[in-house]
Image (cartoon, rainbow, N blue to C red; front, side, top):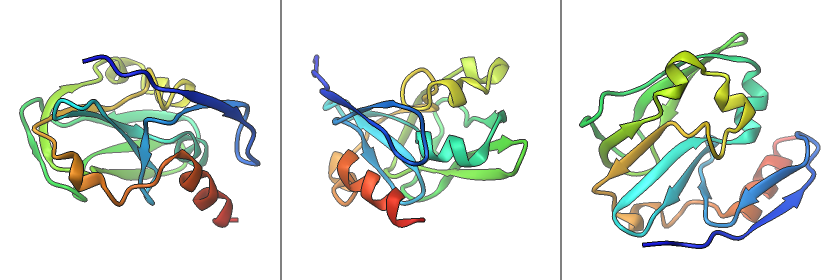
Length: 146
């Protein structure tokens, strides 16, 4: 199934000019999820998160086939500043991990909401993400953190 994702450009006090997909949903913990409509989804961290972390030097990835529970840790991101747990907004089974991040974790800094994706899940119930924020609500949330 093919889904067209519209995007828009904006400037925030936290970032350079960004292109944000309207299809993505966001958590208060600064993860994003892209539901593909076929019980699969892709998860990563937001541009705001990578900026706050600084240079990412390691991404701890789960094993393919691992069962992930909603709101549970599935890995970690380590930067020169700190280490942060990665929390899944939904339950599912790890279909694939972004192997590029093993040798090039800074891909998350360069493209957090595209090439820097972290895991893909299958067996996802999209209704679990019904309370997640859209791009506009997430932008407002980030602004409120000041």
